[in-house]
Structure formats: structure tokens, C-alpha cells
Length: 487
Ligand code: F0G
Image (tube, rainbow, N blue to C red; front, side):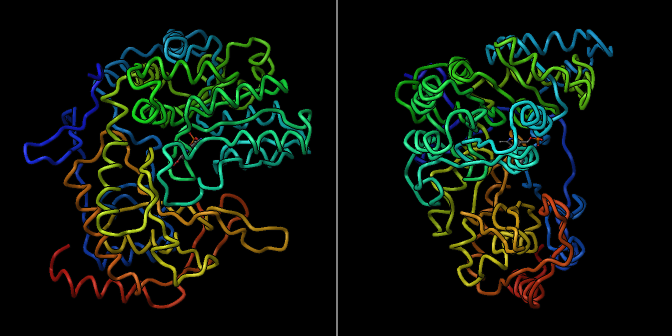
């Protein structure tokens, strides 16, 4: 028997249910506003869910970043924070947590994950360099570009296929990596990057067997291996659930094994430790020294790095809690439950279920909308109108234009519904599934979007769009007809 059971229990009637192994002690009132207001709010937001106010949002599934529920122990730790510009004891406690959980000796703090990426890219990426990775994250891509580098995404072809039974779609393809090194030469490759629970392909994990193989190739060519550990807890959970060798291993051991294979580990504490901040850690003093001077320049002194000391305390406790299976299983088990419902109802989604969120396949949901009209963005806006639930577009809107000004079409058009840790209840998840089914049955009503204001970088954050027809009005009217006075 597994010594560390997850939170999934079998009901007497045979149903498998992900049980909440926590109780609610602080609550926040939510607003489920009428569909007419949701339509108006969508228009005001330029059909961009980043532009909505939470005042109009019922369930905020935009992201898990900075919005995971904090534990009683995290909140308690915040009260003992040691306010000091230099040499804060809070930072000592964080360093100890990084040592204990990630097994890394040197820690450079930064205000969030992308700030770590800025420091790493400035230090190691030169114009003309190539950074191979399983898959990019938006901010990683931007920082490597900014420093004159290029990225190469080396997941197996199958990983960008939404429907799959491959348990490790986040694996970096060793054959493709060898080919990349042969094409560019190891000298042009400052590091190989592996992202845990690979975000943009649907929170898909890699296996330790794969990471070992990539480590071997890096050793062969003297290339540094960098691990983006922002979603390492979920990846560790999937390793425990899906990789035979680690079925009986503790989460703590799995985390240490993953980090032990990387020369450099960085993370967004907004995700991994249910707090706010970020950090870069390594056991190689020379690597740490190369980056160190950038921390006071861009972030803050080396013992706080732009992070509030209170959050540093919460980070330390949150890191230890990442080794607790009941903590890290909550979000992926709810996602799996939700994806199970989607599959049962025939709604196209990314399978197998991944970490951080459920991903609806807008490409197959809305085959009548061309990628140039942003089907995933349209689905995000339509779903908000239909439910008050805010998700995030992860498709061509989140991409960029080429030199000729044409959209670079995304590999996958996804609507991501994030499941921040221990935030939602199962009845709320059932509501999301129900409204998604209604929208799927009315999908023909949904049309495309076009930009009205398009920022030059990371356009999905601040961009404003409009509907290419009066489809939002028609969708809201149909909702009103079907649900009557119901919200
Ligand atoms: N790496 C990964 C894998 C991420 O998912 C994120 C953020 C970052 C780096 C950047 O970290 O936000 O602290 O600067 N992901 C968030 C999301 C924004 O919603 O998926 P950050």
C-alpha cells in the first residue's frame, strides 16, 4: 500500500471523488452578476479577460499565480518576519528551506519568476545563441529574445497534439536535442531549459527518466541544465502517480531528485510556494557569482530581492508544504475530475489532464473560427459571458507577429481554466463543467475577434479587441432564453 495516499477517495457508490483535505477558515464573498452585466463587462474589457475587474468575475480561473490559498502556517509565519534591509533572519529561513527542499546551497532572490529569467538571460544568453527547451513560457521567450537569443522547442511532435494518452508530454526529446546541438554547436547553447509541468502545452509533466537522459546529453557536451521549477510540485505529483520507479517515493525525494539533476533551478514563488516572489538557486558557487551583481541592480539587496520579508517567510513555509502530497495533489486531482467530465460530455480538451489548469481545445471547439480571428480568445470571452468564470487565452493571441506583421499561429489554441491550489470547491467545479457544456451546445453562436489596440510586446496582457459581429449579444440573448431569470 502507498504510504502517502492522495486525496482521491472512493465513495460507497463506486464514484472516485477528489476530497478537500483542508477546511475553509477565511472566506471572500464572490459576485455572480447577471449575464447582461457579464456581456457589458466583456465589452468594456475589450474581450480580453486580463482586463476584467474581479468585481464582475464569479470564479477567477485566470491563473494560479499569486492566488493559491495560503495555509494557516504560512500566515502565522508572516507575523514573525524580520524587517531588515540586509541580513534578515527571514531570508536565512528561506535559504534553509531551499536547501532542505531543493537541495541547493546558493539562493538569489528576485521579485518574481520573470525577474529570475531576466537575470539568467542577461548573464548567459548572447546574440546568436540558441536555448533548447521542452517548450517556452511567454516571459522566458521574451527575455531570451531581448538578449538576442532564439529558443528551440524540442518536445515530441505528439506533445502539441491535444488528445493523447502519453503520461509525459512535457518530455524533452533527446533525439531532437542532439540534432539541435549538431546544427548549432554546443558553443552556441548557453543552457538547456526544462520546464516542470510545461505550462503552455497544458501543464504537462516530464519524467525523471527523461530528465536523466537530458542531463546525460548536457554532460556529454558540457552544457548547463536549467530547471524552471515554478510548477515543480505538480510535476512531482505526476511522477509519483505515473512513473513506476517513483510510485513509493516521497514527494520530498522526487523534488530533490529533479533539482539534483539541474545545475540551476529557478522558480516563481507565486506558483510553487503559494506566496509571492521568486528565486534562483544552484550548488555551483561560480554560477551564482556570475549572476549575483544583477540582483541589487534590478531587484533589491541580496537578502530580500524585491520581496516583502513577510512573503519570504510564507515562501519558506510554502516550500516545505510542497513536499506534502495532500497539498500538491489538490489542484491536479480536481483538474483530473473536471477533465473526466469534459471527456464524458464530448467537449474537446487537452488529455491527459495536466497541472495548474484544465485546458479546453478551442481549435476543435470552434473549428469555424480561423486562427487569425483568435478562437481561444473568443472562447475565453464567450465562456465569461456564459458563466462569469474568467479563464485565459493560450493561443495565437498570446503569440507574436513575424517581421511582415503577420500573426505567428500558435501550435495549439487553448482556453486555460486555472485551478489555484485549495481555492475552489467541487460544486464550483461542477458549475464550470455545466456552463461549459451549455456553451459547447451553443458553440455555433460564437464568432471571432480582432484587435482594436495591440501593444508591441506581450500583447495579450493589455490588448483590446472587438467582436467581428454581434455574436456576443446573440450568445447572451440565448443564455437568457435558456436559463430564464437564473444567473
Ligand atoms: N515560468 C513558468 C513555467 C510560469 O508559469 C511563469 C508564470 C513564469 C515562469 C513567470 O513567473 O509570473 O512569477 O513572473 N506563469 C503565470 C501563469 C503568469 O499564469 O501561468 P512570474
